[in-house]
Length: 236
Image: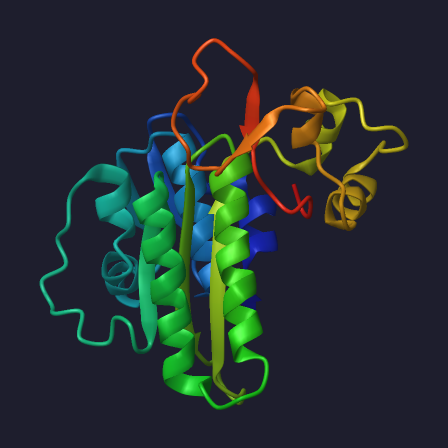
């Protein structure tokens, strides 16, 4: 059976979370980190009260090791030691505050370095992973989840996959909110947001607003000049 990833999770979300406050329904098949992170995000958004597995022998231990039931229900029934955590996987981490984001990005990068430290470009890859977490922190406007897993399916080379999912409004709705010209669909919104120096966040602030770190709390100027988060202008 082919792997089911983030696209499969998004397309089947009505089956995964059929009702608010119900159960998260985990289907059969080979489920990748993209699927797991997305399903967890959907379960959180729908405030599920439990998980139901179509193939419990294959998936129950996996989801419990990844801490999905704990994050969604507060119950951790996994009785084994997570001896491979940080080596072959980093469990699902809820991204809700600065500590969460830094911990999740660091653990994913450490897990990757365990296997491919000597390959060229790994440092840049880890920088991208950190930037992706920073973007969720600054712009998702909803809780997120991330994880990584070293996996392989029959006849294929091992894969190290990391996944980040959030419950934000998405590129298109953000572009519509800020009236970005020339953006009419999801593809155009993604292309615009990924172009260098494009940022919808600057539209929310006065041109000469004082800049602060994105995780700064409050305005040091009190009721004086407006401030805005500092960034490099990319991917916002």
